[in-house]
Length: 119
Image 1 (cartoon, one colour):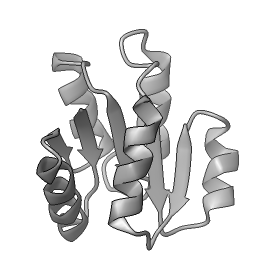
Image 2 (image 1 turned 180 degrees about the horizontal axis):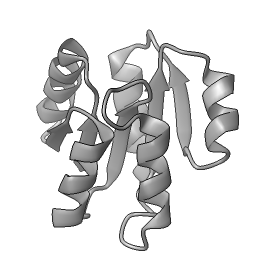
Image 3 (image 1 turned 135 degrees about the horizontal axis):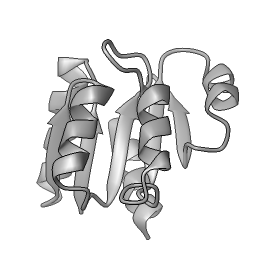
């Protein structure tokens, strides 16, 4: 599985990257939505995108809007996560997120959710 992991939290990036790489998955890391869009423009062949919502430069909702507008990336499942109000972000983004989960979360559960999103 090829994963685009978008988060500004270095600890979350490290933990999630280790969990996915242990499963022999390829992980590409971006620290905000704008950086993630640059990766997608270069190569949109990701199986799933995991993105934080509250990030600098371009937040997860803005990023998601760009992903779902593009014919090259709109079919990629997107799993959002936030320490903020999940219902607020769900209402703000409509049904664009395939999954939206609250922090704190069990990193292993997020791994399982990503696997099920592409099945």
